Amino acid sequence: MPQTNSSLFLIYCLSTLAYLLIAALLFGLRQLRQAQDHKYRNACYALAFASLSVGIGNAIMFIAGKGRHGIVDLFSFPVMLIASSQALLFTFLLILLFREEFVTRRNILRHATPSIIFIVLYSASRFIWDNPQVYTFGEWVKNADSPPLLIRTAYCFVYLIQLAIYTRLFMRERYIYIHQVRQTFGNMKRLEIRWATRGFFAALTIGIVAVSICFHPTRMFDEVLTVIFTLFYIGMTIRYINHHYTYEMVHRELGNQNTSLQEPLRPLATPHATQVPTPSEVRLFNEIEQIMEQQQPYLNPAFGRKELTHSLYTNEKYLAAAINKQTGQTIQGYITARRLQHARRLLTAPHSTYSIEDTALCSGFPSLRTFNRLFKEETGLTPSEYRRLFSGKN
Image (tube, rainbow, N blue to C red):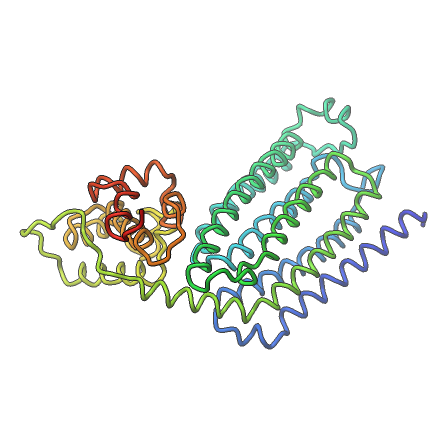
């Protein structure tokens, strides 16, 4: 076996062994099995499964490597699939540390949908057309009429767009979390978990480097990337496990603060006297109130009537009737009222350092302009005027 193949074989063997050890550690660690927060515990198990999958995937890719170079070719579909799944995994693993209520099966599936679509398209195309192996852009041009190759290429560029979306999503949730921590604990930088931010951008960098191998498929590049990715997994796993107790303490305190801040929802309209809710509608509305008070899903700008309907396992028509008979509002109007209520509390909170823009973002509004418009429609005052009038701040 040539020296280059020997070194590549050794690197892949050590990498696979490291991934298996990481998985064994996460599955066998007692403190994770005893973790009170099930989402954190499930996240660690997801990391374990991912570690196991990547290790086995690396071994399969090396053993099954074909072609005149014996390595991946341009726009390799397995490389894209692994890179995309890892980007999704680490985005939601790290967002979980900031705001666990955002990490739901629905949100994860929504962001995984592009990869699922490409898997289906690519698999179907392989039954009809050959999948050409190309190692230079000249070869790619010659085979540009191949549907499997075009699907692989499109997947690459969609993946880069996904990375930009993940970055925006992560920074938004991080921003909200930091403001909540500062409001609850003061300026305690150790609770801002900067390692998670560094970890996210490290994962982002590795994701970009991973896809670059599809443009520069050399054995040395493959070896270096395998080593870097393995070291990243080891470091991320250690930090994630060590954050266990801090995570539960912070989220317990933030939950207590959110509960203590609740106040009766002031409806934007008065229910019609002739609309009497049925007992089942009263029960449903109480469930809605409980979710809103305990989980505060409305702080997520993407949360709307569909998300509320799915969270209660009911239909939108029944949900709309329950809300309307209790508050006289539509579903979206009720969610907006919750956001405005939260914004009023932030604006008048003692010693608050929130700017008007901070208040809009942390209350679940997609933009400052929308917040200003809706706030004035409800109160007759701008947010700045409301703050000056009710908090005494100039």
